[in-house]
Length: 145
Image 1: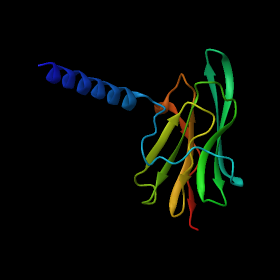
Image 2: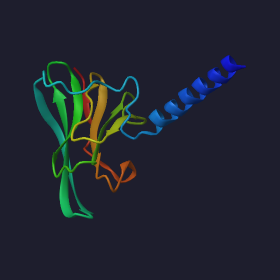
Image 3: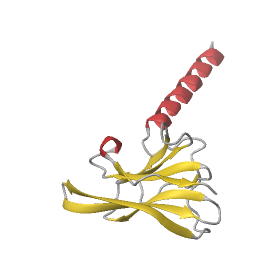
């Protein structure tokens, strides 16, 4: 009886932990790139800005799609207007932008890096208050080499 009860408690704890991880908005999931390590030479490919009104007042948020030229990886970076809690993510498409996957959002000024060879990439951002649904993105970029 004790063994069965212990097994039930362990399984319930595992399910609860899984639900908590899935519900966390900054969890990017497996296969969602790698944290930026600073070992690549980056070049800005696209940029977008939006002026937003928040509880702290009006500010301009700028997101950039940065491409690592050595390792062929792209990441989203909020370069202007970042406040703790703002969200940033990368969207990647392999079918000419008909469908895409989102890596993020990350509650940080930079997203994970994503492989970009043969993919359409764009960087997106949002304020903490607006969330992903009201985010904005750069134009798409296709990395063919």
